Length: 518
Image (spheres, rainbow, N blue to C red):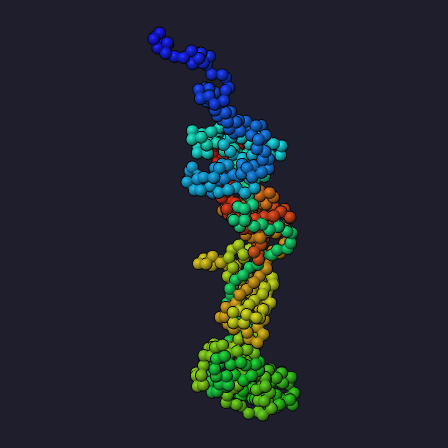
């Protein structure tokens, strides 16, 4: 400053300016600006450091915000998986990276650090009693594996493969080849409708059911034929279906041969009377022989004994001879009418005894092998459903039908009240091979074509596939020869879902070579 200007400034003012403001004096504008900004910067730096420590230093986070067992811990234990790709497991909701479907929550998921967790942090070793991890698999490419936790190029965690999942892929001896143990949560069990039933020891029989046709018993069918030539003078039984009893008159026949035989018989009897006084023994025996021969001839012509006795009593030859029914039954065939000329060997009437009938049924090859003559059978009909009859196997035909590939079996049944009529359909039931053993519901068995699989509930949501051998089946149940013991709970509902899941787990393990990591 120039000397001229300095001379215009008062001395006291110049002294104050040279002395400067006192530190910490309130109300001084220049002093406030000098310390405000450093303090503000320090406060912001402390806040930023606290936030970083809160989210990165676990001890500091727990100190400021204790939440052991709280809502955040429960949230951290939640896991989500894809219904179409069960090997996709994450601890955050979202969509499946393969198919894009929304991930579903896994119920009863183990806590972080347990064996079943796949989170954004590297998986830790399982604690005592947890499932053993064999290796880790790339979620997008199962052929890529790692012995340690890793991430793929998209930042997704590798999926752990456990020892129990590899057990069914051929490394285990208890599980069928190509199957693995399945772990299912409680909620998924309820949604899928998985149900189980105990295997029990009881008696079981193999029932055979078939539809048969009622036919007359061929041993009770009688055809009445003419043994002489003649003409039908009168029919006492003149319509089909008429009931006749044994000894009842059927028809009257005129035959010149029968008339001649009657005359011969009467003449022979008269000759015996004349030869009684003969001194020659040979003549008397000859006369007696002629009488016997004439009478036998009448008998062989089916002349009734009552007709011959009347002929002997009256001594008069009759023009017609009455023929009687040889058996009781129904007239099932009628070939003649009054006035019909008949000849020897011609069928006149057919009489069938229907008090017992046959049922002929066709059985398949696997059923017919266990059928034996004399086995008891039961019968029901649609016409009379309330009636059940008991019969037996009477005959097994020796050949199969080439058209139907079945074997015809003949059953014999009583026929009270003529309830069973020829050509009627009847339902036959036959119990075969009754045995006692371990029995399960038939719905528990999965037929693969080569073997039979059943899933056993091992508890805790774990289901083990078993290869079983099946014995006798019947009434919705099956005998188990091996694979399942009495008391085991077998899956009877939704077991096909378990079958698909088990095969998928085993196939994925084989693709990654997991069976060799044991």
